[in-house]
Length: 193
Image 1 (spheres, one colour):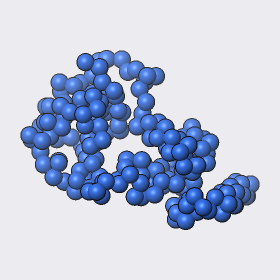
Image 2 (cartoon, helix red, strand yellow):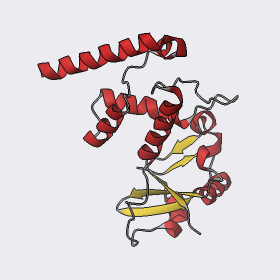
Image 3 (cartoon, helix red, strand yellow):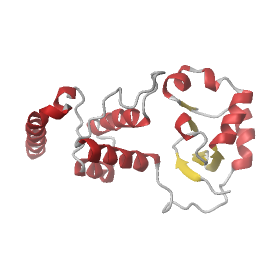
């Protein structure tokens, strides 16, 4: 059976990927694993309390800084270390989220994703919200490589966060003025460096 692959930097389970025929791919100690998310969820349900944690209940995400021995025993059957990586065909989580942000921008005309975007009745945030917040922090702290920074700059991604009023549809003139002012600040800062 072929799976859509979601690459992660460490073992993570995402609620959004359940029942989507997706496998997560990650590496630990020079071993690579590709785990079907639904089979992984069944294992976790039967052997752990992951689905009762605040992280899972509030955000639909749970990750392990380091898997336990028992979890490694389960993962052994999904070891793909000896198979060649097919990086060209697999999109990273970052690239998938950038595509979602680009679609969001096409629909709304800006990259400001409010914290309550697509929020469920249970208070679960859309993964795009979490990704944008983390990416914005990485952007501010210069923790993104040049390709990612260039991709964000190409879609006029803003690194400032307390700008919600500027993104109401009726405030388009104020928004454009603000964006121009912020670009000038960045240009001035770069020239002074």
